Length: 600
Image (cartoon, rainbow, N blue to C red; front, side):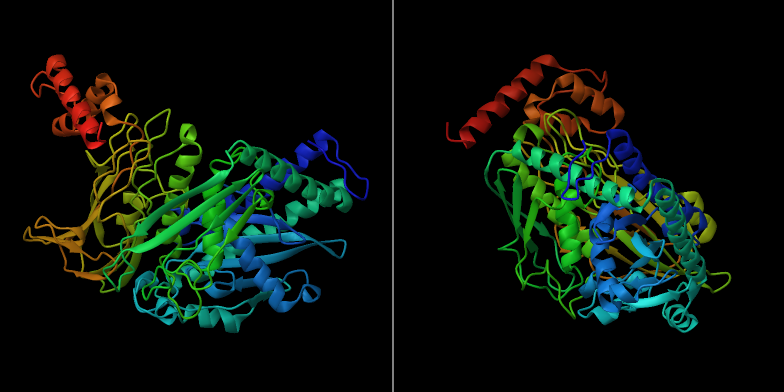
């Protein structure tokens, strides 16, 4: 566990473990304070934030289990802020704010605060807090304007010294408040981020006072080296070779054409090269991914398979080389819009990487998830007060099946550990009514181990409203692996007060596909409905035990028709029991059909 460095110092295992745990504890305290002190529901209720600490070189040292897509990107924001102002200019009480996608940020709603932590006059490390703010201006609520220029998505902030000597710059604060539809949240959320950073400062200084600066810095070095060793050992367990996969976003919102993610993984002993050559060039619509977001998606996607129990820090980044074409939608440059980069694009990167890994380590492969956040934003006017409100939600879908078990149902994509907005909070704060949030039968990809199920979310708007959503998998659903089947497609719809169905995104009953990345106006009494999909299946569905299929039917996860068509299991709809003879015939016919298709 311990290691020796050029300076000859070495930590004993107990001190190492105490310091490692302390680094994680600091971040946990930050998140507790931020969540309890924040004003906006997307932070305190939906947990769309992240906190981390970094060493003096701005290498990730410790984090909480918040949003992976935030965590592995935050060091780019912190580095940009320090680079702009200069390391030597930093003083106690400085706090820098940045959300610029082209200078370490991701999409404009993710506001990143960086604070140097001093001890005995020297910089011990940095505390960084990132929160997704409800609205930072732009052409539509939440920045979901789906235009062709970053300016339409809101207020873009380069590195700013927002606090000096712990005092806020009131001029900058006025600019921020003047450029949002939700000014009531700004001061409260700023105070919450400040409190989180001050907690990290106090805890790190307490640790340094107890163990000494030299010991703490030695612990910082060793915890990174420790994770690096574990990660390299995990890579050695993957056969050397080159593994390739492709996935798609349904649209960029401007064109109806799918957008391609192509990834090639090259495993070379204890290192991995991730190459995105072959991915599409920059697109007109708002799903372009800045470098920080793309790197983050790679890091957390691989972390699932490379010693996931190791301390989560920059040591896991060291064995991974990322090759990103200069002209690519995964390497956004000004003025490309990026609002969907975290919620849509990062999940497609994960899906492609997981599909490539399914060829490398099939015994550990996980079928892709629904690969979405399904983040929607709605501006709705209260018919009583005429006040306008902005709210959003994240209706989850299913994860893919694995070699050992079914996928998880209605679980956020790996990009985030966020929660959906609770109906009680939503109805208390906004002029809306939640009608349903339940499981969507038959939405999982069939397999020996099926995918997890998606969901159905239905909300009635009590006032006139405008809604937009970032979603995908509306053409074909989630692919399976190892012979597993894909899931059904997602769909977004409006049900008018008089009962008319209007498909906003996805395939309508007449077979026509509708581009989902476009805003829609709803009238009072209209119901907004999101049907999410499940994860892909793992393994041949015909090898799933009939008893497990029957259990799914009894639980309402699978209909009798899907049990027959996808699994070859005949279930009597009256007695709800398995017809063994009919099942044997169905499976024999299915096997013969599969052999014929394979040319055997």
